[in-house]
Amino acid sequence: MYQVEIKEGVRLENYRSYASLLPSFNAFYNEALLLKRPLRRRTIWMVNSAEQGGAVAEILPRKISLLRQLGLKAEWLVMEAGEPQFFSLTKNIHNLIHGQSGAEITADDVALYERISKENAQQLAQHVHQDDIVVFHDPQPAGIAQELKKTVDVIAIWRCHIGLNYSNASTDQAWSFLYPYLRAYDHFVFSDADYIPESLSSNVSIIHPGVDPLSHKNRPLTLHKLTGILRNAGLLASSHPELYPRYQHQVTRLTSNGTFGPTQNGSDIGLLFRPIITQVSRWDKLKGFLSLMEGFVKLKEDLTNNPRNRNWQRIRNARLVLAGPDPDSVANNLEGKRVLQELVEAYVALPAQLKEDVVILKLPMHSAKENALIVNALQRCSYLVVQNSIQEGFGLTATEAMVKRIGVLTSSACGLRNQVRDRIDGRSLRHPENPKEVAYYLEGLLSSPKVVEEMSFSAEKRVLDHFLIFRQLTQWLNVFHWVSQAKESAQSAGQANGFYLAEV
Image 1 (tube, rainbow, N blue to C red):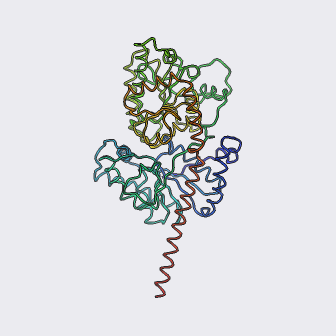
Image 2: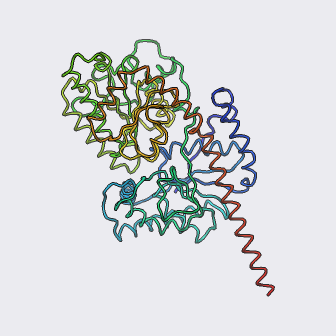
């Protein structure tokens, strides 16, 4: 287990410079000043399983930085496992929670999980003190609290970012495995009420994830900054002067023979000129990359078969960009490599002309700042951002596009439909695994730029009202305040009872 260094980043006062953020920020700041007072003597620890790759690793630095700027002590620790099988097991649990079929959890799996949990609990005990608040994120570190509390009496909170709005044999298997370890927790936090299993019906809060509007991934970009980022990342060919040196690690593009190379291999992507349809996610079978690509291909083939389509020029010029992190840079990401390889094989089998219209990118992860700026630029170049998830805990990539006022097409997975109101903020697919339905929605949105623009204005306001990091932090401070008060009350009651019995 190791501690991650957190840079301060954007200062609290910087948010006041943006008129659109001022109401949300002021409401958060005024409440935070009151809520932080009883928490100042405690340290808040965040524990997860990866320093980079995925939404949890992305949101923790900003959350911790802002807590510190409020005057609280907050730290981030990443658990480690010397046995790779541990992460294969927890990925299996992740898929089971999402209702997907998976391997049976064996006695050896239980022994492995408890062994890694105990090792990390012993290391964590060297950092924390009694009455500190420790938040464990998702299934990977969920078993640590039980072991930790044997030596240090902390306040333990389990934050589950994933879930499914119905149960089946797979979800039952996952929750049956996790439940014995979850009994050690003082409180639980889920992203949606529908994700809460029946076994965890008390001491639960609902906190929707939120975006930081001034993070590198979401901050406004001037035209010069936008084109500069594209140029620096290798996504834009230009003979014009360079204002800044190119990034040391460049984006790579899948070539027609199935290998990755410079993005300028092949025709220019056309990010500044074409209707770009983009999905940026980690390479995960639940993200629906393959069916999105198949739907886009069907859209193009239907255009060829129906040249009288009145929107033929917009559809003909549209390109699909599928982007995700370089799987070699994300620890313990065997499934990501498999999913990307399946996508590569499907791409290689496409006709030559369709290969020009489908762009698959690997984004470097060596610099979190550069990676975030690349994603920001790609989203801002997009006519439409898609999140075609088969299952989705929440789906911050949709939120990111919405706050940028970019049109969105999402699946109706629980986390996404809580953000995007169909026909108001964007469109929602009912069957993301059906390429025919994907093609139908893509054609409709490409054919209706005015409608897309109107929905994007509504989407931006929805994020400003409901899904900013300010709202999320206020809710977290309320949870910390509540669990701290409950702990102190229990301790006071125990002391009083002890005194009374002694007198008797």
